[in-house]
Image (cartoon, rainbow, N blue to C red):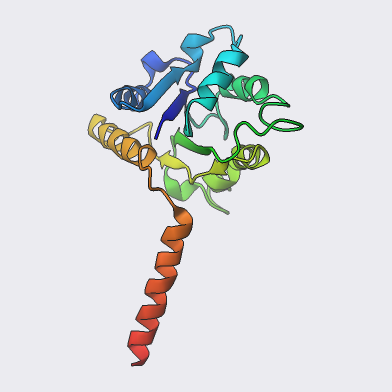
Amino acid sequence: MKILAIVAHPNLSESRVNKVWAESLMKCPDVTVRDLTAEYPNMDVDVLLEQELLLAHARIAFLFPLYWYSSPAILKQWLDLVLQPGFAYGIGGDKLEGKEFVVATAIGSNREGYRAGNHNNYTVDELLRPFQQSVNYIGGRYLPPFCFYRSIVASEEEIGQSANSLVAYLTDADFNPKRDHERLVIDAMEAMVSRVL
């Protein structure tokens, strides 16, 4: 499966996490890594080139640090310009239907902080809802996000482990949450029957 990893970090060379993630993904033969800030320092996105890249890949990953509960500005600019009517939606805009999209984000806080009543009040899934809805709107398939919490205080070893986990997650061509859920239901039913018998 061909994967497009779109990195949206304002300064990737200074990044502790996204830099390691990008370098790890660059070693994978079927992964194309794009550093949006390096490609478009003035945010002047080459729409046709980016659309060609989307067409050439089956799974698209957005890699970014969670900034103010969203992504850095370059990714929003990319989305606004690249996902055009007639290409991504609207009449004739079916070019991305069926493609898989996943967010991979480095988060400074701990996981527990992202829930109702805690420091950040909302889950990461809730905060990423605009990405999910955008993918739904263009007919894509939104995969569960890959989240690396406590990125600010993570050790180099933890960052390296997260990179290995990210590579495994993104390159899993057999990713099928529906099938996995159905397997869980079957296992649960078998467990309940065995308890009764």
